[in-house]
Image (tube, rainbow, N blue to C red; front, side):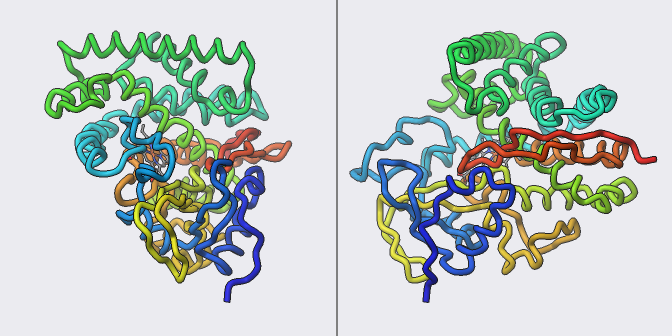
Amino acid sequence: MRAALPPFDPMQLATEADPYSCYAAYRAQDPVHRGIAQNPAQRTCWYLFRYRDVLAALGDPRLGRERPANTGENAAAASPWLLDRDPPFHTAVRAWLQDVFSARLTAPFKPRIEAIARALLAPLRSAGRCGFHTGFAEKLPAAVFAEITGFEGEDAAQVAGAIEELLAPSRSRHRGGLARTLAEDRARTLLSRKLERLLDARRGMPRDDLASALLSAADRHPHPLTHDPVRLLLSMLRSGYEVSVSAIANGIVTLLQEPDLLASLAAQPELLDGTVEETLRYESPLRMVDRWVLADFEIDGRQLQRGERVYLVLAAANHDPEQFPDPETLQPARRDGLQLAFGAATHLCLGATLARRLCRTTFELVARDYAASRIAPPRPRWYPDTNFRILERLHVELAAAP
Ligand code: HEM
């Protein structure tokens, strides 16, 4: 029998430091749950909380990103971006973007990522208590994305600044007004112009960067999406930037609360990869992803009907004790299966290798050079957001081990 829980409302958890105990109640008592819809045009929608249901749903062809015909306005069908689309459109685009975004692209940037991270951390240490979120977590991915795309020197610095202006949580979230709109417009224009110029330069003279890789893929696979490579690159940045900021900042909050683990990372770097997976599992940057029901079907005695919306709560699945025993502890040596912060199956994140590298480099440097760091007051606070787990405030005192 299902317990009488109130309809799940993700907005009520939006700023909670610990949303996981609430997820746990739904996961245990009503794992396939009809709750409150986020879109006012719909009254209710489904939420899946269990790992096994979420994993199955991520690969289930009866669930899709495109709203089925005759069930309401289908905004996704107009979008050429692959995250909004289902097969067969999605399949072709994904095949060649996967090729573009392979580990081959990010591996040569490893030393640069470390150099950028080190250069960003050093001045924060001398500042004493620092805003880690704005001083580091927002800056590292912006600088790295600019260089991986192919920018150098002053251009790279300007592009990184424009990415932050346009996409950094501290600037783009919940701040309105004319000044903000104008700043965003300027940043968008600068980014588009710089990208156009870079693509022109790479057309005749390719290098080992994302811009050249995209152009070469576009030659080999002509497709509506490649007609506008600037838009494609901007979509890529949009998909990956804020979640990367979140993974770095939430990862540091998690790690600094585990001083023993932080200390052992310096001596046992072989734990770093497992630690990255655990911080992503523990504080998943995307709390949930959504799908449309494309054909009626049943899960666990519940009837899902065509045209209904389903939210797959990744953050709840990643704390499911059936999959991850003792889920509230960080265990870098866990071998309990794939954590779902990057999704799985059809839309599995294409930037996962890069995102993991950004987190790994940050954790390695902090463990090695600033192992006595601690979270400083006031306490971390998260933006009110139902889908993203994004820190609004994170102060850290960086300190080397005595
Ligand atoms: C820790 C950081 C990141 C997290 C947690 C994350 C998470 C995710 C998730 C959960 C999905 C699947 C969404 C769904 O199933 O509806 C996804 C897809 C995607 N991500 Fe990421 N992402 C991260 C970083 C990045 C980066 C750095 C990039 C690229 C620059 C990127 C590019 C993409 C793209 C292109 C897709 C769409 C794939 C498809 O539709 O086939 N992501 N990401």
